[in-house]
Image (tube, rainbow, N blue to C red; front, top):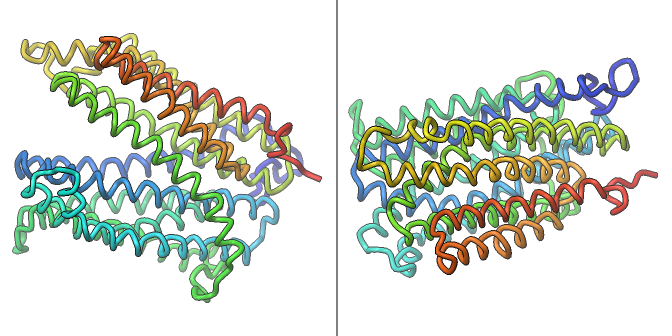
Length: 467
């Protein structure tokens, strides 16, 4: 494949479907594994917090929720660099200045967002007390956040550099940094939380410092790569860092703010559903957690394909290649929905086997949770296909720099339809947790269909209007 044109080959002709599929897979699989690595980092922290005891785990959950709410929005802001870089490379395969300026303004965006968030997170104890949390838990959570919050800036810097190497279709470097981050986080958490190897025992605070160290290492590795690798070095990404490009900065905000809001809409509705499950009962909450863990794990595949779609569609879009846009988008979409259809089939055919990964099926006291989890997985089968469809379709549209309307769709689908329907079925309709899952699945399906229709109408709407 020619790096300069997403829709053409080195022979000058258009890619075939099989060539596009190969290019998408080569780009997507390192991104998928990088996403899994970041999920594993969080899981490692949760496990070690659990070793400290239930109070530490509860305080860690409170602190993580505050941190995650800000991190997910910043992730959306910095994600906007990917479609912009991809478009510029599609328009001019050897572009250096425009790519460098986009990366620079992405780093500026990270700094501009993070500094005020640091100030807010420093007040975590007051925020949690205002939310009615127990004073002891609020203090422990705040101590944890004050160590964890410093990870935001290096993490956002890492994301900007990941967008850069991914747009150049070299995502293996980001995967290597992600794996190093997982190992470093686990090692430092073990040392700092429990006081091994002569270090002081810091408890939850140690977990926060471990994540900060790991994210800093990931950014440092990526910075070293872009400075040393011959293909990346010619961009001089950190040269004249102080020079502003305000039109480009505004364009990043124009693209990134809706992406951040979309992610917040989606994440917040699932957090809200977890809280509502707790009101229904402990068994419902436990079953919900199992079903969500399975769904979240499989979601990493369409998420990686969505990131690949943004790059592939963006490069064809920058090259004014209508057929390349169509082929890149549909290739990623079929892959994402096809994979999720397979996971949905597994949930229908073998739900008890999947639940058995978390609970002993032969223990009588587990029976209520098992039965609920199995019923949730039946709905999660539909949930899976819709979730894969909306994720990849959103990535396809981001490649066309279309983010505002998808944000509106997310607000309507997740909150205006999904959550309201779920609450009504759960508490007014008497369906309890099963009703909440029906609501979540319906909301995802609505968003997936709206995004798909928008993609189908992309030329009529002027999203792909080449002179």
